[in-house]
Structure formats: structure tokens, C-alpha cells
Length: 373
Image (cartoon, rainbow, N blue to C red; front, side):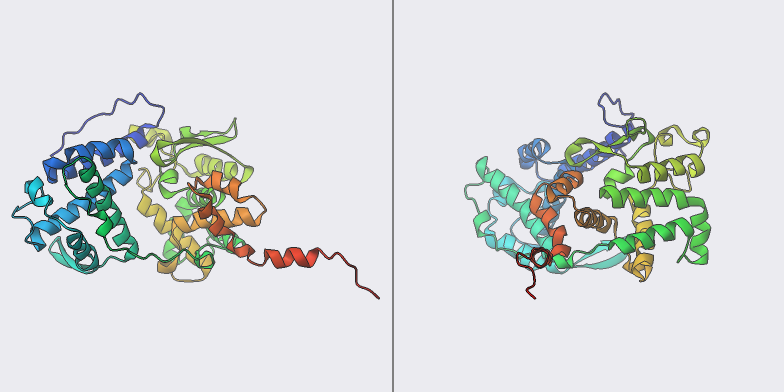
């Protein structure tokens, strides 16, 4: 059992974000202990090369592959991933990886809490696993642990090209319906209304922040009261790779957040020290979880869409909603790219799909010759 510890935080990053990152680091280290020791230099490489969440994803994929080698192949004689030797790993060929990705990963079973689950991976998941293994094998070849670079022999995995028209998002009219639902309770069931009476200001502030700034789920869940400087008209978020960004506030957001704090958020005197600074709290007076945020977003978006709760949208769809709405209001894709923190402007360009008739509209309004009578 891992010993509990207190974090001595000397960075500008809030304690809750530092604590969450350290939990991810602990998980990374526990996975590394399950993997072969000859990969230790690769673990060090990941620490300095990728974000913490990416590091965790790589390690999880590689551990899954090593477990496959142990239980499903004759390549290794080890009884656990940590016992796989360097010589055994060097026997792996591209065809072995292709069998793992193309056959095993498509359909396999896992045991969990006495229940057998059928697992399937679609091309996007397979592509991520392929990427993780490619990074590992390239590194081991470069470090001369492996004599051959087998990565070029990995079979391609075709991913569907993103189609702008297929991006799921709320239209501006649907955003208005969603905000009306959280403001008035319209469209909620009797049971949901009981919770709504206690959380309506919180839920409204969450939805307004999502649809105004296109925040990622993690960015919103980690917000603190100290993140906001209302006198300066801005609030602070932490993007991927710990990047600190100041976001400007507008009147709608200020009202939604301050209404929640003044009217509904519990008084600090009844909160535990660890929760005093957390902005959004659950009914148990704990920092709201990502799962709870997903559920409330699905609930209110389902009302806007006129569909079942299960078919409501995720927080990421509100990120897409923010992008398309901003472009529709006339902001450039470069402004929207900066606001949403897209690494590549081509990602932002996908959200301008609703302007597919823009060329026709421009030409129609630009008549050089007046109608002759």
C-alpha cells in the first residue's frame, strides 16, 4: 500500500492540479515496475519528452502488449511482463505486432470483479496502440537494444478523415434552449427538479463556461475560486503540458459564476481545507468529479436536442459548439484557434463547415452590374 504524503508545492500551479499530476505520476511508476527492467532508459525518455497523460497512455499500451506476449504467444517464456528478457524482446518481428493489432486487439476478453467482458478496439484505438509501440521500438533500435528497426513493417491503420459536416455540436438556437432549461428547470423530470433546485446556479455557470470558452473537461473541473480575478476581468486555467493561460471574462460569465458563489455555493466554514478553494462542488461538498460534469452536460444537452439522456452530448461537443459559434459570429479561425488552444489551425478549420455556402453568398451580394431595365 502506497504511503500517503503531503505535497510541498513551490510552483504557481494550484495544489489540486499538482496533486492530480502526482497521482498520475504514481500510476506511471507503478506500471513501470510491471515492465521489463531493460526498458528503464525508455521510461526516462518519456519523462522528458511527452505530457504526463501521454506518458501514462504509452505505458498502459506497452504493458498490455507485454501481457499479450506472456499469455498469448510463444515468443517469450516469461510468466509475467517484468520477467521478459532483452533477448526475448529482440525476437519480436513486425508480423508479431501486426497480429497483435490486427487480430488480438480487435476482440478479446478480460476478467474484472468476477465478470467477463468482451473488449473491442476500433481503428482509432488501434492506431494509438500502434503509435505507442512504434515509439518504443524506434527508441530501443536507436539505443542499440534492438538490432533491427521493425517499425516500417507495421501494417497501416486507416483512419476516417474528419468530416466537417459530421462534427456534433449544438446550434446557437439549441444553446439558448439548454441555458433556458438550466435557468428555469424546463424539460427536467420531477426527480431531476429536486436536484436542480440545489444545483441550478452551479450547473448554469458550468454550461456558460463551456460554451463561451470551449474549455476542456479537465480545465473546467480543476478551476478554483482563486483562479478568478474579477477586478482584472480574467481567470487562469492550466492547459495541456501545464501551460498557464489567462482567459478574459465577459459579463455573462461573471454573472453566472458570481451568482453561483454568492447564492448557492456552501460557506467555506463547513468545507474541509482541501475543498475550500474548489470552485464547483458536489452536493457532498467535495470538488465535483469529471464524471458528474459529463452527466449534467448530457442531461441539459439532451433537452436542447429533444432526445434521451443517453443521447445527450459530452463536454467535448460543447467545445465544438463554442468553436462553431465563435466562427459564426465572425471571429477569425486564428482567433478561435488561440482561444481553444488548438495545436494546428486545420483542426479549427473543421468547425467552419457551416459556412460551406459562403462563396455563393459572397458572389450573390457582389453584383457588379445593376439589372438593366
